[in-house]
Amino acid sequence: MEADTLHVRATDNVQPVRRNERIAPVRTASHSARATRLPVRSLLMPRRYRAAFAALATFYRETRTLSTPTPEHRAHLDVWEAEIARVWGGDTRHHPVLSPLFAQSLPREPLLALISAQRQRQETSAYATYDALLAFCAQSATPVGQLSLAILGYTDDERVTLSDAICTALQLTAFWRDVARDYARGRIHFPQEDMHLFGVTEVDLAEAVTNRRADTNIRALIAFETDRVQELFHFGAPLVTLLRGRARLDCALIISDGRAMLSAIARQGYDPFLTRPHLSRTARAGTILGAVRSISEETLHLH
Image 1 (cartoon, rainbow, N blue to C red):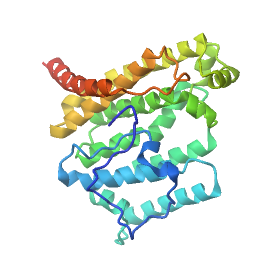
Image 2: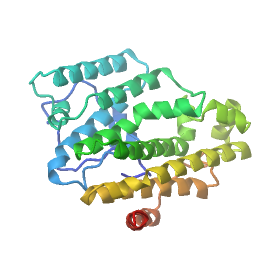
Image 3: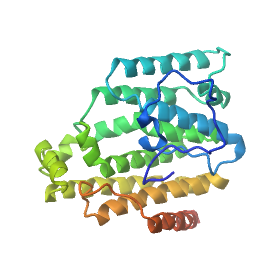
């Protein structure tokens, strides 16, 4: 899972939706995997898991494009909910995306939560408190990790709690990287209580977008928020040692990529209005070394 793009990935040779089995939601230019923010990767996973991961990637990608408050998008979300009810209700008719997930005995609740997140995005453009923002992440981000763990056979509370922290950290990393782009689209993810604490107003954000430069207060706010994200990554890091095989490396890469993106934001002086932070090729190579190092460090902490 790459924090620079924070996008859904699936293997090129796994196509859960065949050409003649297109699902109801329409595809748009934003349908591209690059348009999404959370990772679902099957590249490093054993072949027996890849169909389910590819189906999860498709579900996440398709539903995440339905976040605008239009009748069409609301209707498509209704269709997804109805199809989930049908498949999990015992209807044996094949669904190209949901049937592979049902076959893995996955719970329906995280899928419904991801749909609920899109309904919330249709209605909410700002958050009063940090807790309210975390509550949104519990709908939009943590279900992806929960379903990924379930595909691998992990459903215990310890692993889920650690995964929730990592997925929340990834979502918040994307918010702070894309703060300028999101503001231009009418969304503010900074909690209003934090904006008040640092003396940041919507007018300040508008000027930062126009001038392509954040003022001192905004940069201090972003530094504060990214420090919180670092704490979430630190809390979730022990998950690496609780996974086996390729999943362990994949988890370590997720965390390393996320931390690298936070470092990229810091290198810009906590000013993503200047230019959208990204990872250079050197930084990407460094995330692999960081992943290997984190596996060793977390393993040492167990002894």
